[in-house]
Image (cartoon, rainbow, N blue to C red; front, side, top):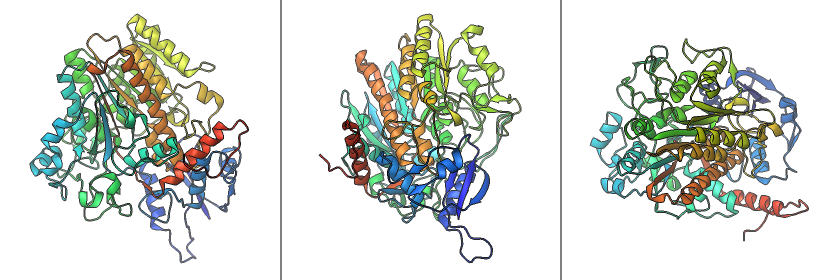
Length: 611
């Protein structure tokens, strides 16, 4: 029997294989399936559950059965990485790796992890932080971060940084006089994700430890650069809040955050892949795994807080993000671009205040300088550039947003959009998805207009579920089955949306003439969505899509000869739990796809030797 989980996300169905028994049978549902099922519940994905008698086979009809598409012919799929992902989901086993700590199942964990995540810096180094020493070597330092000394966290040999150190780096470079501060967040990208992407891209396994090589942000040496590892654990797993009054009603005084090197590993390449500690499930040391809201608050406001918080401390105080500090104190222009909805947690944490990450319309109002539930009488100045997804996402009601929720687009209501548009007397040149208009062309035209007229820029794009089309490892936009089902895009979906690299170009076009400097956030949010879905093909594609945006940043800096006054930080906000078992399988998929691309006849092979 096969369990089909129908998601609340439009055009998306979730085939999830489980061992299911009725009351007359003695077998039980395996614990890994329960984990996956409950994780999906926690993410708010499940609407209904239907048992469907669909046999597993090499040629499955899930796509045509559930979404009206063509059959997925796994055996004959010419895209080797796509074939590997499809087969892994159907067979629930893969030679190259798995999602979760259970060795005999491919897909059992769809949430975040407490892994140490990578940080790459350009134009600045980490020597001062190293001389200061890791906060995790000192009980006093940890007490300042978490409010208490977390259990099993102090370690005299710890070398990893804390996520709040990235905030401190931004403050330091601003004080040092840097004019361009750019933070690039690959949402959900841990060290294992970069290793998979590098192996595929290069057709070789280039590293087994350290900074790595093979991706542009690993290899670039056009300026001084550094690498470190970062702990992301949140202070608290949750807090009780009132979205209407914007108050934190209650939060546990005792932090549940922390990081145990003995269980989690001193670095990602030495961690135990068969233990549930990094998933936050260890009964003895259940350290809190962060969400993207708490991590964004750490990255941009320098606080440890509760999961779900957008720059509110656990005791209910609003915090000022680095972008707003630079805007207020230094006259910086500020901007943010993302491949996912414009008011999702990472972008929200760059600027807004809200007791809950789910109050999307009000968060967008903060981002764009309109009165909101958290700034009713004195709205924030707003960002100078905001570009992202959410276009076309309509909802009559949303129980997670406040009483001031307006039926319509759940992220940016049409009435708010009209108030912002220069055509209606607002400050923003607005570009949004239009039928028959190429996404890049429309967005860059708006960016040039905004720059010429000294206006702000708002870009609003996307497909179903509020994000840009998911790029796969081969550079196409044809994701296959995963823990959240399948997505299909029309030619218009792809053509009418810009890429993250296009968005980055547009943002720099508007911000570059700022007389006092600028701060910019670029978020590759689709890495997180792919990893939540346990889709290694889409995960690699998302990293490579983000790499293209990184290359645009570097090209801009070099064209302006601006490394002397530019600081670029590339990092993640948290990890997931992909366990690499044999990276050579992924490298071989990269070689096969490159071989196919090089053949005018379209010839394919199942194995290509490394060069």
